[in-house]
Image (cartoon, rainbow, N blue to C red):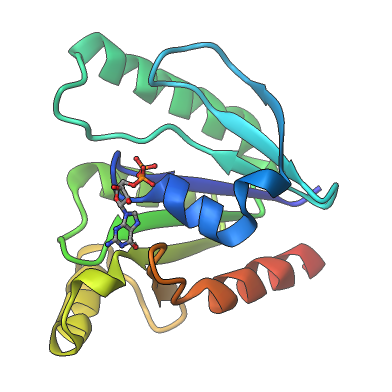
Length: 174
Ligand code: GDP
């Protein structure tokens, strides 16, 4: 089955984006590896695709050992699942320059040859005139080209939802 891996730093709105896309009630919980803040949730959607909720990162109050656990978990995930990931969805905050950890995630998707969609969430927090420069900063920092996909998104308002869903459905068709 197609597998969509969602990644992003803590508090970026990853859960909100996922809920906006599929709605919790449509999510079937199929398993997780143990851990406190560091676990991976797999959801089976309509028996058609897996949505993989990767653990959020970059939370300042997380201990060093917890951070190391996160890194090990992600390394293992990418080693085992690289070929199985249909699309990686990297969620960043449209208001901020992508962080060092965002870059690590982005490089993981790239290095494993995994198609990636970058979602710039919290669009509703910006004024219209701020959107274009914000998107440019994200593009520059992640070194995105015209072929890369960057979607301004608001989990709060629903903007970008149809576009993201369409891209994921297209990815299912291959
Ligand atoms: P996660 O830690 O990445 O899963 O983040 P959450 O989904 O829990 O969201 C973190 C906070 O950001 C919550 O207070 C959300 O209500 C808020 N949030 C998430 N997405 C948006 C958005 O698009 N717009 C606004 N204004 N707030 C958002």
